[in-house]
Length: 486
Image (cartoon, rainbow, N blue to C red):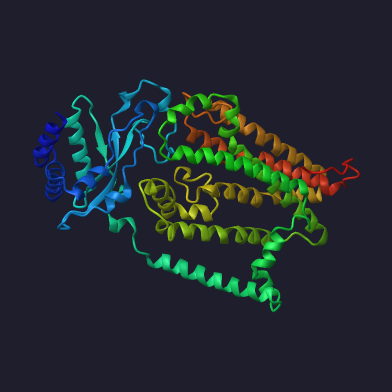
């Protein structure tokens, strides 16, 4: 029966309900199916073999199907008239596959790239002739479902950016990519020469500052001018960050059984994972503490230079951040390919930087365009920069009028605690990130609570206040005894 339906479908292709279907595409599809079914041609069989088959585990959430990328792109007919083209297809209209309401709230993909109509849209892959346009593929797949499953209305959607041939899967280097690589190569050679000169004792002060040996030794020196507890706090917080991002990255890739995660999400212990974003508070605390500590130490030796403070801070962070943005815009697209490349790299990283690169360098991407962030992790840098730029408004009163400065510090601390509570109450948010909630979007929670500076300032202010007390009083006067940091 299935074979009969396929033959009927092949005959009906030129008369599908869309006259804009490319005739060359229709002829190539007919030839591929005919040679696969009737002549058993290896190239045609490989094209069908590389296409997603109806999956198992549908009721367990197996809705992201990859097909076979390499097999499809290597397909070529004997006369080389037909080449393989790999397309990702979103099949909308499969919401009746399961009655579970929880799956509609389960973030099977990042909210910025997920299909808005349904959380259970099935993502499949199809290998078609290269003569077919994305529009043609969507019509053909929709028509195939119409013939095979007439009682299941399915709409196929195909983006141009998600169709690849052997040529387009690995595009040639653009001019700016070459410029970036050449510049990086030149810098590497300079650092290599400086390192060699330093090793053989021929380097001057400039050479030593560029030497990988000297700078690595300084980076790994945890004794000079540092606090042991700060290093321990960094390590523990970083482990928490890695743990949280490990689970987040797993949610972004295709999984065979994502619905099985629901019971774990309801366990209290999982709150450590779902609220891992709070681990960043440790770094805000450290940032506020170290900034204030260095400020008070420098204030004893010289007057405060506002221009130097702001210029040094901006340049020190912006130069490496600009290099990262340039890397996203140039070289990143040439480092790989595959079924998920456009979704996770092209759309999530490269396209966002093409549109919003300036928001990163202006340090405003935690307020503007958060659904299309360039260099997503730079939201932390934006918050830290904004807090640092505002810090003299608190540090100077603490320096010249400690009593008034402390009153201002504790007032700001109280406001920074009250504001998240008020926002949470007004929006009826839960106490933390709850991706199974009936009444809010995790992305909305992150937008209103997780990213804004006014909701993340509390640990930074605590760090500034602690630094003030530590510079005002010695460890002895505070009654702090020597302890071992574990």
